[in-house]
Image (tube, rainbow, N blue to C red; front, side, top):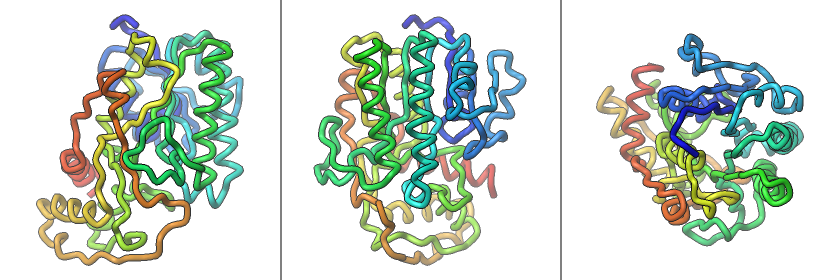
Length: 326
């Protein structure tokens, strides 16, 4: 791919990761089409882009095939972020998760083939590792899924692989590991742990850790994820396409350590926060105990070089939440 400007369709473009991608690629001078049905995304994430002549919004649902075709009109590349996230949500409502994450994904993939899209980069998930106990996680060793959500994200990889082999469309899957950062929604039943804890601490409420707090995650700052999406779009290495990559920093942090970081960084704005007690609740169904990515494959084939460690990313995120949501 040349470095010239091009047109990218970003599905789920009003969501946490999608809106950051919209902003980034517009800043780089590309044209961006955002497709979102606002079921989990927010207009306020992208409102500041509405005046940009290179930005267009299509309000619609990937479960409708014609909407997918319409959104692809004029697009050359796809960053497919649209999905219903959350393991607990999929356990409570597996049918809707499947409709969006599998049927919607297939609609988007098939429509991309029909539209002659040059490359289809999609959000995969670390949940695909399932019950595999090996650490760090390497792309070619997975276990059995532990939730309906994990099933849907694995099916995405299978479909992408079949489409690349059968129809010749270039695909790259990015297995996201616990992404966090600016614009991540702290509210609602399925809020991710970092923004949820930040909001609770800012309100002097005690966060509840599921289990004893020794479960660990490879928390990954949004800017590392943006870098991976750009590298996946830009690579001209034929060996780098039609595969999947861990998208992470490559380090793990326990939930207990996470809360200590948050208390430390938030107490710079409000000294009382460091004295807030933590509550421990039961483990959550479908959760894997430990998650740690090997990013060697991405470094080798895509020249990935993540810039933000957990502590660096948390400092940025905490500052953003304090300035925007306090």
